Amino acid sequence: MRYTDRSPTSRRSRGSCTPLTTILSSSEMLERYSDRLSPERKTVHFQKISQSVGYMTQLLEDILIYSKADALKYSPNGDPVDFELNREENQAIIIIRDRGIGIPPNDQVHLFEPFHRAQNTGTINGTGLGLAIVKKAVDLHQGKISVQSKIDIGTTFTVKLPLLNVKKF
Image (cartoon, rainbow, N blue to C red; front, top):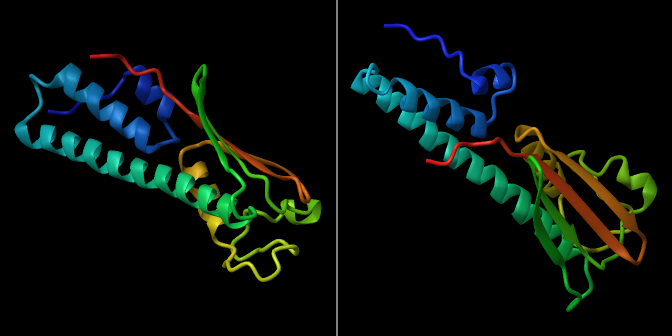
């Protein structure tokens, strides 16, 4: 038996498959066609949901861990690092703000390139991979990341991740 997914989620996600759209699509298939799906097909959808949740969790951890680690690394000892999580309409917004060394303007354009380190990092250990990993994870979520920074004042990263309207069961 073949099914054509004509759900709003399917149309919305064509060409833009994210872990969240996979979860939503599979849960809609289970909800709508559970009585017609074979046990094997149901298992496939449950596995897709499980794998996507794991993948999405790992991507979010990458965003949070590497962003926070960089903020702490480049802040003087004892200076606080602020972390905010907000929701605006259909977006989750994560803001990480430090009071560290700041990022020179000419380095900001290369900030998310692998192995790039700002010229003012001096002897602070690092590989230049943290923010490249964050950017890749944000891109995989189809989100956006921006930076505002001033030398010797600090840096603010803003991550915006799309949220889907999911029915409450």
